[in-house]
Amino acid sequence: MVDHNRQHRAQPATRGQVRSEAIWRAVAAIPRGSVTTYGGIAATAGYPRAARLVGHALKTAPAALRLPWHRVVGAGGRIAFPRGSRLHREQQRRLESEGITVRQGRVALPRVKDLDALLWGSDG
DNA sequence: GTTGTGACATTAT
DNA sequence: CATAATGCCACAA
Image (cartoon, rainbow, N blue to C red; front, side, top):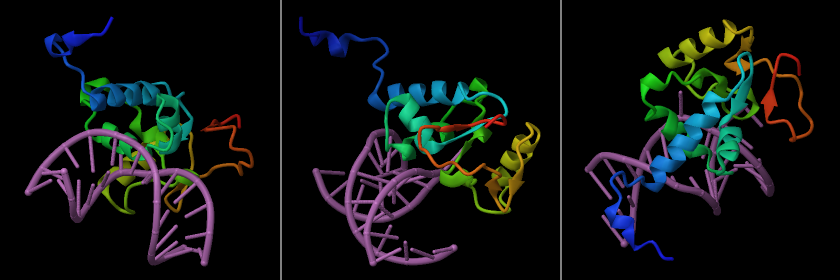
């Protein structure tokens, strides 16, 4: 059964729409007090190596979703925003309010040797 | 249709 | 630490 009714859909969800929603869900699932990387979110959402999409998805995410975007950091725990920018400070403030220490624009991460763990929790 | 840019990552140098 | 190259996808021009 081939779906030729593609053009009949009322809400034609574009690829980007589907991907963004998957990314939003992945971000919303980050436990409080933990942080994840853009690549980790992308992989969790089902799009490995598509880390850039995460940035766009977060940027275009409706504020009503109340996503914990501050729990998303760059590789190695780096905050993606430039030092001193408003978003950078806000992200750091939010992280610290969850008990996460930020030093030199980076989350104080325990040395992770294996890549099995994409999530870093307070528990380690 | 192509080009350039972006809340990025990974690997190589 | 930095720079270059490549991959990923969306979006504006």
